[in-house]
Amino acid sequence: MNTLHRLDGRLYLEGVALDTLAERFGTPLYIYSRQALEAAYRAYAEAFAATPHLICYAVKASSNLAILNLFARLGAGFDIVSGGELARVLAAGGDPGKVVFSGVGKTADEMRAALDAGILCFNVESASELHRLNRVAGEMGKIAPVSFRVNPDVDPKTHPYISTGLKENKFGVPIADAPALYRLAASLPNLRITGIDCHIGSQLIDLSPLADAADRVLALVDSLAAEGIALHHIDLGGGVGIRYRDETPPDLAAYGRALAARFAGRQERLLLEPGRSLVGNAGLLLTRIEYLKPGEDKHFAIVDAAMNDLMRPALYEAYHEIVAVNERSAQAKRYDIVGPICETGDFIGFARDLAIEEGDLLALLSAGAYGMSMASNYNSRPRAAEVLIDKNEIHLIRERETLGSMMAGERLVD
Ligand code: LLP
Image 1 (cartoon, rainbow, N blue to C red):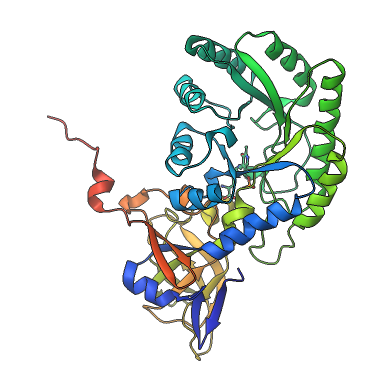
Image 2 (tube, helix red, strand yellow):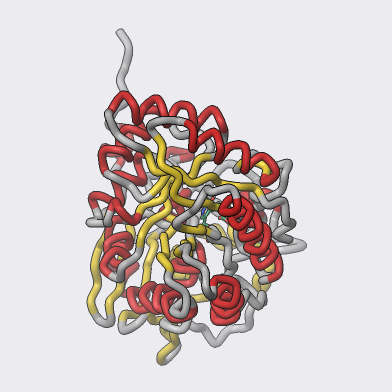
């Protein structure tokens, strides 16, 4: 995160000292850098400049309206997986004509909302979904744009919970079944075939599975063309990993070159659905140490952020770097950083060497993707606030949830 830097022992994001944000907005607090968000988007735009393309930001990674609006203004499209995400994109000023709708369980209501909005395409994941979409579109007197999400069965070499493109995963249709499904789609009256899609997994560190998936999809596109089924776009999904610790993620420019070579002379537009690589390293979670609990074998630092705020360590044993916001000259000790939730799984990081005291602030880095968007109210903890930094300007982009708003909607019975 290059917009994060230390000055006289204090940690800053862009021009703002993080300790001042904790005073003003409280903790836990998600903080994003506008510069880092925009730089990540521009890195994509540059890497793929040689190929006609559309970057459809995967809204699930971080769905705050301000963030969606920034990407929309840069020209992004969006990859959505629910009617809720569609509503967010529209509320943020996103262009529905640049929206692709993924997901294995689209409801008829969600299909209607997307058809009303006029999205770019539905990434259809089963024959049953195709029939439902055909029926819903027919009832509305509309033609639904269709792309199949194919499952290229390549091993993305990532955490099993975030790999999606193997044949045992629930996603997509087997690549071998795709020709028959395209023929079926061509025969249904209320559908228009527009493209093809795949997404093999997330936090991919190796470029080769992405290139292998592209080759398998392109071969399928060519065989469809040979039988007269022409596609307008080829969507290769998201998945590019980021550095959390010491990973060397795929070089975007190299990915861009690999795809440029494959797309040269082709008619179809390239679509990408990056989530994590656009926002992950543009955000952090600020938390305050409530208690230090010394132990015989190890020490605990109990902080005010928990698994409900940042679920990734508990769910995937994910590593997030943890740094002290204000440096101390004291000798570092080894701590497990844990939250206040009543679960052993409520940890943020193990065995971290830190010079800290009670009341100090910690920054949990690389928390911009799948942080706030996966937050919950577990243990009846109101969800954190979100702040966007733009040089020296501070924008509160989401208020801290209140106890009242958390309980609104619940009713007692007689
Ligand atoms: N497109 C589709 C259809 C997806 O399922 C996903 C992510 C993306 C795009 C964006 O992938 P990305 O570029 O972010 O890798 N919660 C997990 C990650 C789950 C990803 C699921 N699909 C985590 O915190 O690591």
